[in-house]
Length: 76
Image (cartoon, rainbow, N blue to C red; front, side):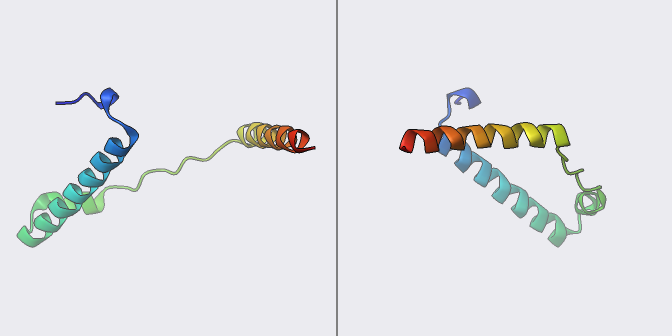
């Protein structure tokens, strides 16, 4: 079996898509069978969304502006 580090980007995408399909099918099967696992999954709390700090947004903005400045300077 391939190590995850030896897979190409396309293979990783395919693996992720397959895993999502498997999870969806397992969920559907659990719903059909009335499995308690389906009820537990439905009651779990949603993941907390990541919020970026103002300092991080400012750094990203400054870096983007610098990249565009280099691009525009190279075009002249």
